[in-house]
Figure 1 (spheres, rainbow, N blue to C red):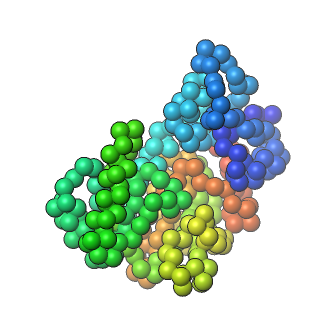
Figure 2: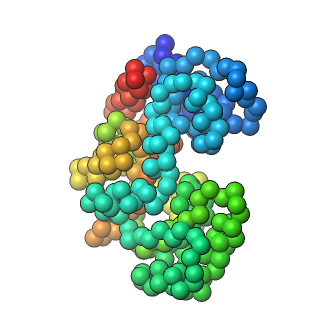
Length: 287
């Protein structure tokens, strides 16, 4: 069997084991963090391919150097998606619809921040450039609140070890529906709509992240939206990609992408999802 090294041991790892084993691929966990590794030794078994470059890039680089395998989504693919500003810039330049956004590279003065805020109709969304699961994302309804959020980001960015000292300011799309579509090897393979429970919405929550309590329901996107998510993956040159769409009555925009998307239950994907993923892994192993 083909041996697949998987650095993370969470939902995706648990869900992919049996379906890929049925297709001749052994899914095995490779621990890349919270351990001690001697760089002049070889602590890993032999593998044919890796499935998504490790989350901690520094330790991932060590693992990559010792494993010496090709990856489904290597380091560069992860970075193109992980840095939200870069992904949006590439997509916008290619003519794909994205939310109106500006990237703030700290430090900037208060006048520059005021100018950035005034580009938009309040409220605005403020988000770190490279976090996931909605972590650190805030909504500011007025200038004072916006500057206060920026003050907190300044404190974080003032720490010398902080690698990313940028954040995004974006338009807020009220009432937008939130979809996560999956693309495998250039082809749309399914989507879910993410929605917070009515009680959470009534309490004022607005971020439809599953890790924040949203429920994911399998849906089928229309052909135009399928083509949009496929073109997104093509533009970013990423083989295995989650594409987040925000949909209002008159707009569809690519809000974010995720090159390490969680695999949901198979019932939420198109027929042939596991076959297509297995084919991608096999092709990667041959590189």
